[in-house]
Length: 476
Ligand code: GAP
Image 1 (cartoon, helix red, strand yellow):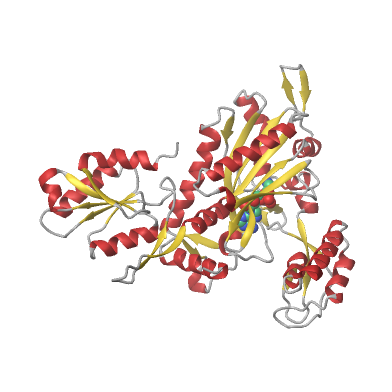
Image 2 (image 1 turned 120 degrees about the vertical axis):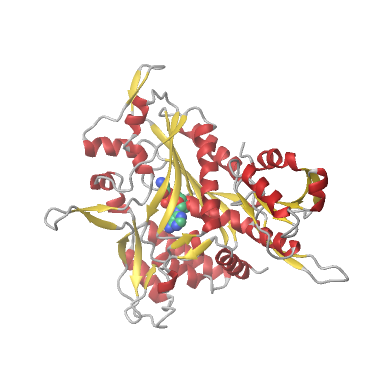
């Protein structure tokens, strides 16, 4: 399937099967904001749980916290977000449409032959690196780049546009002060570094993990849940002794790639992209890119952030944020390796890999199905319990099994429609196992279990169902 078609098919499927809805859809939606439906919310929660447990439960030296979205405004001054968290933008005076300059030039470059494209992108990179806004505007004009809406090249100057959302805290306007909705969860970890280190008696090297919402006023938001204005991050800051950051950076690069592969997604769907132009706080950084329907794009970042954040918070707060290392009898500000993955991007990655349209035609009959081959540990519903018919005591037996399963995993009961149709509906939702209760169940206490991916069916004892599903859907 062509990539654009695959993206559209996934978006349609997500809506049809309760995964993702446009926010405020009855009011025609809110751009780049999405809601998770009954199945999407479960899938997202399972990915979050898997990440959380991989970090905290599986590492004795990593603990998790849950910091507030609102933080003291000086946090964002110290972190550099007030001054640096911005993108160069340009507006078309006729259509009033605003563009991120790099996206506008990149879109134009895509229409050019390879050599011209490479030259244009190299020119753009050089101008961006020097923050040369006049030069960027000139480049847009020289290349006669037009607005997609008005079709004109009537541009404003290029200006920086901060991506943070701000709001007022306080009841009356005079007393109110401006605060920001956090654009990353990481700063909640940095400002709690000493609280956690002291109360948890943590010894370096150790990590603090956190999941939670972040907000960015993305100007060009596209690619479904890939780039949103309200999204969720799963971040971990790993505090290390200065001088050891390179080896820990390599360690976490490898560890995070292993985590990705453990989702059942093959190695050739991933690649590392090492940053050449480093952020002001980093001494090494890379993205883990996944081959989305729109091509290879960042799903996670691994950053060696030096001691930048803690040092800045020391400076702005006037509080010491040092650690006493008893092994070497020294006080120091720890260095930090950060792993930062977008939860919504992880959901989109898992869905992109799982979505399959299969042709099941035989010489006798045309047939096809849409299946979400989600890893069983992440599937919203682990087991569908299906009585073959609505009579002869089969629904009662199926209900009994449902009640027994409920405390252990999420299951779903359905008695309407032919069994084949019910199987296909569960395939589309991504349910890995279906159990059918039939007349034979009454005689010998066995059931038919059907496996989503192979569509194979086998008979197993009714009493073995719970253990089998627990075994096949466990995370570790
Ligand atoms: N603390 C470091 C940090 O925030 P980042 O590269 O800006 O680094 C980390 O973001 C991850 O957050 C990205 O790899 C991506 O998965 C996710 N992310 C960033 N902006 C996003 C957006 N607008 N929508 C969805 N996910 C986003």
